[in-house]
Amino acid sequence: MTLKISDQILQSVEKPSRYIGNEWNSVHKDLKDIKARFAFCFPDVYEIGMSHLGMKILYHLLNDQKDIYCERVFAPWVDMEEKMRQNGIPLFSLESHTPVKEFDIVGFTLQYEMSYTNIVNMLDLSGIPIRSADRGKDHPFVCAGGPCAYNPEPLANIIDFFMMGEGEEIILEVMDAYMEWKDSGKDRTDFLDRIASIEGIYVPAFYKVEYNADGTIQRMVPQGNYPQKIKKRIIKDLNETYFPDRIIVPFMDIVHDRIMLELFRGCIRGCRFCQAGFIYRPVRERTPGKLLEYAKKLQENTGYEEISLTSLSTSDFESLGALTEGLIEEMEPKKVNLSLPSLRIDSFSLDLMEKAQKVRKSGLTFAPEAGTQRLRDVINKGVTEEDLIKSVTTAFGGGWNGVKLYFMLGLPTETNEDIEGIADLGNKVVSAYMSVPKEKRGKGLRVTISTSSFVPKPFTPFQWEAQDTMETLKEKQLLLKSKIKSKYISYNWHDPELSFLESVFARGDRRVGDVLISAWEKGSRFDSWGDHFKFNNWMEAFRDCGIDPAFYANRKRQEGEIFPWDHIDVGVTKKFLWKENQKAHDGDVTSNCRLDCSGCGAAAFGGGLCHE
Image (cartoon, rainbow, N blue to C red; front, top):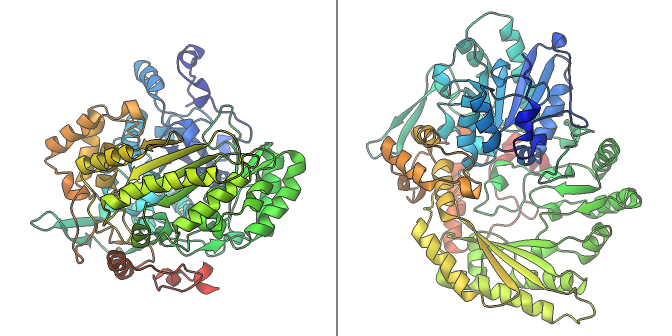
């Protein structure tokens, strides 16, 4: 069924182009040739979801298969949701305006824990039962993947199956299994049983959790002949994997409205707070020639005027100089700007930035993360104050006048001296600007200091650590604010309440799923969107479900505790992570992967830097 959304409804909501589809390079297929339909759901608004590289890749990968049709679905903003519920309009896809409940598989990408209420809301708007146990033969299968899927347990009673690892490696196997099952006439459990044998697939219903008297997990028990550990899937050679030569060009502005060129996956650094740095190991790079080929085709097929080089740490790309030279030679005559995010303080190159930003000069962003060298060593950041001052002085001498500095509050072992060190670093950046001759520096210095609150994440050396209480985090924010005196420095900080909930769901088990549904029933959705965050709803939901959120957020774990995610194998071993935790408390640093192999376990995947 194709829905007709009236002009009257579209004209009554903010940004109607979020809902109309038909953008340049979107895919439209004749349904008579299709055996399986996949609804790719992003649990946030259009302009956020359309900025996500993973969606762009998997959308075109699936649609390049002649018998599969992938369509996009985004969370409607609150004004559109109200109109939909008033007029009995179910959640629908952009390409064909088909109700989501008519698809075969509904897949969510899990990028941020605080989008989970949107998942519940989207299922409800679709007319799909929220709990997997309540779905029958007339309902689609609901799956999920992405970084937050590495602790799948908070959504274990909602999602039918999870795909662990890189989607290009696994999703076509799942779709093939689905099309084979669809013709068999067998029940839902049979399909889930079939795909449970595919490496990287986790079906929560096939596992039972047993708890100790103190609320910790005793063990996870497979209910049948299913693997004790679910091993993530990776692509060994990125040059040989799929990457689209065209992407959808939206009608409206989106957050990252440009070509994104993925240089590599993984990270060599091992910052101890960073989940992505461990779950995406081993490091695997694309060659400059392949990237230049992608860039040329994407620019020709989209007309975009900006290319962003994406990775966890762009300056660690071994062939960055050769690549940027090639891109500038190809793109400068076309007035296409080159964006270089994720540059490290210790490898800043004015020459590189001047070449990249010949067309348009943007601001610079650095992430020291901590205010003192002691704490930077604890988190294994691997940069120094000298690196920062040298980099910003170089930038100011090249005409830049805007610098953003990102830090974290609440890191393990943090003291007031570390917090005051953030303000001191800001002052030293101002002094660096003043030390540059007036004729060389840009006018109007702007230094922005931003702090987020530390959230202990699964599969990091800090997964055992307690998060500071909300009250403590607020005190630290006020302390830092009181120490910033310069008129050139502005200070932004994240809401500790939001970070508290992020910590609960980052390390939660199956029991917090009931809290999630309860909070949604009380009106929670778009929790990361300022005015829509209703902290009191969440606290009521925890009380109603008899669950203490501090058990998940503010409790330090012991070495031998079994975590809700211990049945997921990301390659990096728990033994290695514990060793890194102890080194953190001793202030010892670990070399990056190119200098010395630390034996994390990722070599077991047989690809990338580990096997060069």
